[in-house]
Image (cartoon, rainbow, N blue to C red):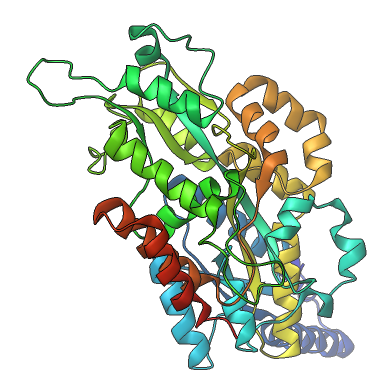
Length: 436
């Protein structure tokens, strides 16, 4: 490495007369070579910008990995920048792409890449590698999250799925077996009725049976789509030429939410802040990525379980991937080196065990080290078992707008008492306007 290269003063301790002139020439030559080498390396190092939205411990772990990459690759320097939360990062990225100045690499939520690909700003991974051969070690669901029209455009980075957190102490208090969480929608209602209580006798409910995000935002739609799938419904028709979320299955899913909130009264539409963590929510629909964080916060016995099923056993997949944006061939090559390194087997193993995210590689899932980790972390065993029922959201350009319209429709039915069929019919008409 360059840092170990030294100029050796060959004249040291040579005080006698008759100093050999050619040694002076050699010294000058070595000095010239060193200066030239320094200049060459300095100009050869490629700098690329990388944007991400991770926060907390995950951000520290991730940025430490970026620093490690920089140490191991002296010819590449990754300038890492935290660009705010997911929403702020998405907006900044869209502005940067529109202005022709995107970063060289960006960490993106699952549904962003189709929008970015449509602008022509991204580089498909086939430009760097034989994707069929390269991705043989990746799980099929991880590839589903990054495949657009049969082509891999981004590198899978992290993957989670929706899961049920439940308070075992609250289960015991009402006579429920803490080792038998609800397995179906019907059991969710049955358990929820027992767990929704006025503890202090003032006529107000203090503890709620179940909670999940219900307002019209990305999280709520992500959650609702799982209920839609469980009821046998779909967001789009088979060829993605029209939306399909106004059929019988979709109406059933919306009506189930209405029943939970207004008829059974076990779902609160005004949940207390951190309600599960403070012991006021018995069952919380959440993400596998939140297991470690929840374990640190709670002081009660809690468990995790697969989502209660209905006609289908399904859970939705969340997560992120790393995408490369068009620039010079030199910087694109450097970006690929970085992205590929971040997703290699060793790093995927370390990231999965440090964060609780589901491994992306089959080799990691089969490794002795990861299986030892599973033995020591039974919660993650549940995550891995449920992953076989996971589905990715549609990777189409219209999804962002379509899901927004769907979220508003569900909110109208739940909060404004609009009939589910009516609001879904109206939403389908509006959503179809975003499909080209």
